[in-house]
Length: 148
Length: 209
Image (cartoon, rainbow over all chains, first blue to last red; front, side):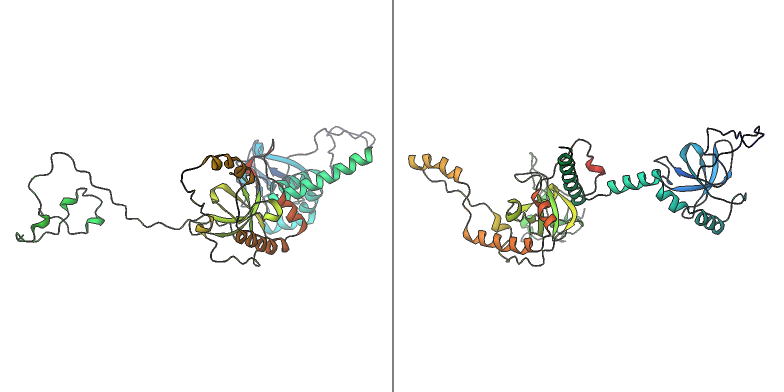
């Protein structure tokens, strides 16, 4: 869910000042490693601590906790509730991620679906590509017929 | 000087054959048949190089197993998808369309010109006689006799009629086809009928077959 942070200067409820930026770099933020040459490319990681302005410590159940540059990350709209505890241990992190259902939310999101679709297309065998071609030809024939 | 005693065929270093002799001390006149001469020839004598390796059988790619559908990349049937049957003695692959499906007969194919796809067809029902080997596919030698004018005129018609295939080959092809086609699903059959080609955004190194 999108969370909008209140500006420090809002005084009444009727005018809630919202920031144009909603995906903050914060504890528990789920990010996607976006640099192809990085060994973690394509993985979802959670920010568990900060090193400096450009680097953060990330962790995930399947990886070894490591420092990574923010430039290599694409920030998602998902946040894991870590109860303001920096660098949780593996079990706590896994439990928190399960509680927020990171996997399920990601799989249901448009971004996650797009990545899954790209991966599926890349893994098509020659026979699969043939079947897709047949299906597309059939579908377009139906569409053309319907448009007549 | 004593030369190491080894068989002439095993020596890669000493090129001159005349130097290969097991030294016998003392050398009698009788055993001096290959006696080492004091002088070597004025002109270099060519000795043949040793070629004593044993040919290893061609290694079959691990992705190619009996029943694998292969994409033919070169030759008369390029682009066709064929079924692999077995590897012959020469290392070439024995494949067939099947002929009834896409017109590729029992034929040999070099695995270098084949892409193995992930689709495997059931070929357990195919019984290939032992006579189907490399000699089965060898082209018959054309007799070089004197040709008369009639023969010359008949050449064109013979070429247009196509190659003469023996009845034996035809019956074998039919039997093999029946065994393979029987195990094919409808979409697999249509797939074998279709041709492979690359289109604009295809990157073969990125594609899975």
